[in-house]
Image (cartoon, rainbow, N blue to C red; front, top):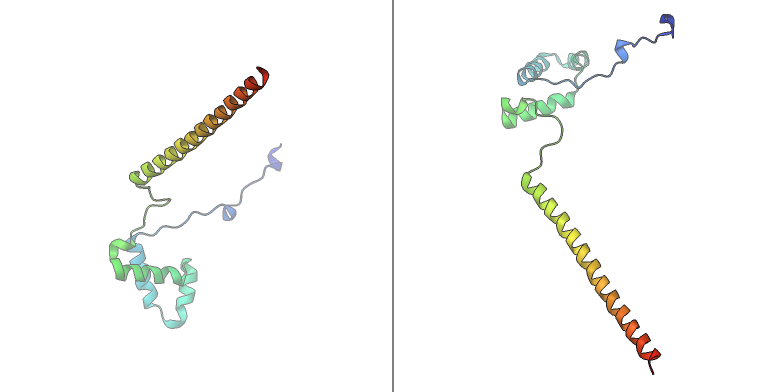
Length: 127
């Protein structure tokens, strides 16, 4: 491939990452939004790349839990409680043990039937 045939990436098409706002930024944005005149709020939201629902959620969180509630949380799944993991592990072990016990009982029944067939065969063949 020559240099003329190389494909250049366009920065505007690059994958965007999710924006994260600190508590101070959220409070600043909330106060700026409230200061906007009625007809300008939508344009202000578009300029800042925000949604009215985001601001409503931030406002609700601020009212319920205060500034600490506005701090960004950790991403991803929450760590499971070690007790829950242990319970699941024990449940799997129990199910496996029950399955083995069931299989053993079936084998014992099969052995009993086999011995009964052998005895019947031996009793028929001996006069």
